[in-house]
View (cartoon, rainbow, N blue to C red):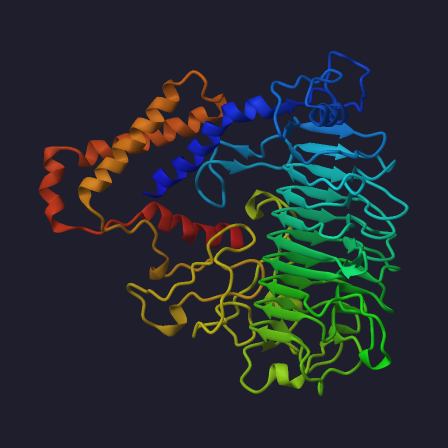
Length: 556
């Protein structure tokens, strides 16, 4: 069944290919040309062709459509000036998967590859400016690097929604929003499985992210979704913030690694979520009371700033299963207007976080009412970094090409492993690498409490094999199972016989075809039916063994 579900996903991609071919403009040169060479199509010309809905320069528009996808190849596309699209753009880089090889994390096809497509501004300008025409921008499998602006948005100055999928922003600089600046009234940002590194070294505000707070005298409402990203080595000593939120944001950080970033040790913050106003002094706030911030399963360590997380009473702040510790500075968490212990109604809610609650600096200063007796947070005031986490692992295939930290299991009350045995909280179903956290209440053979898998703190889950981890269990109709195998076999057989099937899928299809042929040969015959009356439950031992190997080979 699992194999059949996977092939349906592949079929969706294959089925979409003819349509995609009609609406895709292919870029054929790495140079930044503009109607200069009729034999090649540049990125800038492709954007213009999409805007005009007709061929331009060396770019051919295969059909008139509402929206276009711009396809880039492997290599570095250089820019002489920023790109200012007049329509919504969907730009895709070279596919970052290898369908002829199994991935080391999934033990299945395809294997993940490093990104191969770059857009380089060479420090001459920012890369994208969508604020002028307020059009959305979606980037997939693309590295943006060396963008620069004296004002806002080193790589992207956005006036509409921005989506980054499996992409990177590297070494881009601006005074505000070293990587990204959001303008306008509702421009939002979605980032998934992406890397942001080396940005905002000379920024004064928002070395990674900054935004406008107001639009036509109203708070700018924005939605932020950061899922499974790494934010590494951004910022500088003169910056007041790395992430600078204002307006009326709804922001959620899930399964991210935020590490080795730098802000001022005098007044800088890694995550700033405050209105910068004292209500007793009748000051105007830059943050709406309807704002919200969720930090879920993040690893926030080895940053340097006066405060790692700065908050006030505006909006709600939910922190669950994060490690927010081992940072350099005066505070891990700080209330904007002073000491936090006696404060009420701050909007903070904390569960199962690893924090320095009672030790010396950098302490997480939060209200007593938030961490009352019996709270589920772990005070790691007496712990050292090396007891709980491995050193930062550089990007490679074993970690999904994103820098991450692996947790250590010391079987102690203060490690980050299996912290919620009573299931009082809810962690993410997958970790930053996309691997299942394998949290289950069902244990088929092991009954000891210590054998249970429960939520780990941070962005990466330690793989631990228990009976509850077994995958591939099935007790469905044998006839239904055989029908599924036959449909899957026929599907792959037809794809292999189809002359239009992309060549990079051939190896994968042959492997799947052989697997389903083997299943049919073993079970679709008279002798096999003799044993089916026992209603056996089948276990995929290959999957089980792989999870055990994953723990040995990758985690240690």
